[in-house]
Amino acid sequence: MVRKAALQHFGEFATKLDMKVLVADFVPIVRDTSLDDLDAMRVFAPDACAYIAKVLSADEFQNSIVPVLEALQEDCSWRVRKELAIKLPVLISRMDDKSVPERFALPVFVKLLTDREAEVRLAAANRLGAVCSELKFLTSLADNIEPYLGALSNDAEKNVRVAFAKNLVPMCNFFPKEAAAKLLVPVLQSLSQDEFYGVRRHVIMDLHALTDVGPNGVLAILVPQLLELTKDPKWRVRLAVIEKTAMLAQVLGQRMFERKLQNLIVQSLSDHVAAIREKACEQAAKVVSLFGARWAAERFFPGCFAIYDTNTNYIHRMTCLMLISSVSSEMKDSKDPTLETTFLPIVQQAFTDEVANVRLLAAQSMHKLMPHIKRATLSEKVLPALRTLMSDADKDVVFFALLCQEACAKSGAA
Image 1 (cartoon, rainbow, N blue to C red):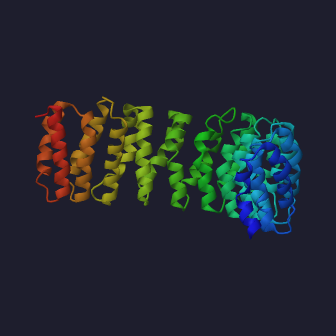
Image 2: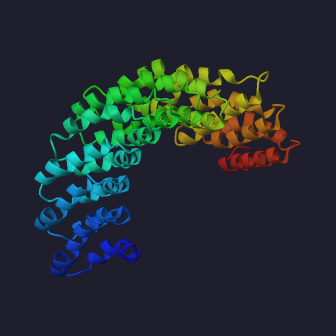
């Protein structure tokens, strides 16, 4: 217990010492710790090596620390091997001799990725991106990592697959583009069909980083798999796909968006999960900002507003009003009259809705829409409707109607 308490602070303490004392007295302690009979002692050796590596010269590190690390990779305790996997990125960053990582660190890392214990594989998979960042100067990096990707994507332990999915795209950022595209496509296609929703979700999280990967664009190749994920029974997976639609629209262009992704947003506006409906409105606003209000009025909004019906669930009408608010806020500097002609009739209709929540959201939407409405229209059409709302039975509706009236007054509408 005394040795354990000392070793917990050993590394940080050792870095404060004079170099001669460190090499003569403390490096041998690290070696002895790595050979201790108790794995509860040996588990501190990787951490001590990581601290000492920050202050040792390259020669001392090569002669004193690398042999210790080589022994630790074969340790019979999985806890020691796990700790080595955790500290490996820091250790590699201290290997000034560029031949050492290729001869030692890379073989050690791929061995940890295929360790018999799931906890060790998990720790190694969680550091894929960090290790590849430190080894990016190696021309053989992609070739050495590739043989193990298939095993990781099919690992029996779901947490390992999740960690791999989280680190896959960051890892490939350090590969040549053509090699990254070759590696990514089959692995991402496999992970997108994983039985565990956490894996499927993390496949989508870093898609923005794929915009420059591959000679022909990996994203365009993966669109069919992404569209399949929009039907996923787990709402968090569907939400993750929706969060990327505006980015995909920017990368793929208007024509591809209309063919592949437009229906995705339209259908998401009717999703039974509120978070997805809200995210769909947010992403739709970004798409309209990207391609323009005139295009949206002709090709996009008709599908979006088709769900506005007083004979169906009022949630659909509220979603349409949320979309109007999102687009109005996203394009607050736009003077395109298309927004007025498209949105104003819907908001005015909602002013007289029988559901108070719809009337409330209509007043809020009008407040955000006002910068896009001409002064004459505010005086002739909007103010009379607001005066009716100001006598509404719902106090919240009255409050936002008054806010709209004040905004009209500031704009000069009479």
